[in-house]
Image (cartoon, rainbow, N blue to C red; front, top):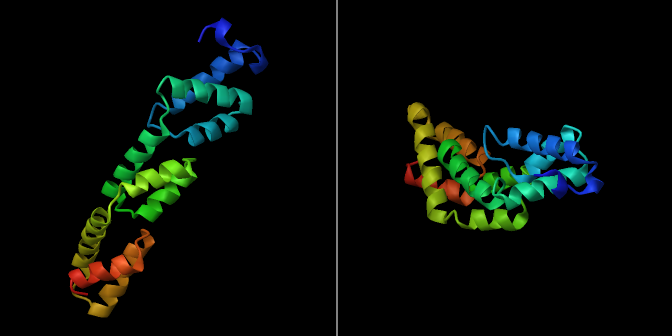
Length: 164
């Protein structure tokens, strides 16, 4: 951004450019939501006005896209951590994603996809404990799925399918 494009009310070019550098460096390791970047900038001592101006500019330039971030985060968490829609929604809220985007992204996760994730997780958890009493194994698998945010009805359906 050139000097002539920085509004004077932001305390001059140096503060704005410093804030922009902080935000761009923070985006280096992985994509971040606007909310995460705002929090990061505030922790680094950037004023709210400058932080909002920098984030607005980065959104215009395509460096920040909360919807794309939320979709990528959702897919990653489903694949790697086998999390439910409910857990993914909670994580996205913590990252400062708006309710509309969370609802949109979570609505894209169908019941069948969530069931498949829960089934895969249940099978993986059941294998090493299959020698235990069926009731003990059932409780352990149920607990593992519940901790990942799956509903009781979905858990019970999955447990029936794997014979518990």
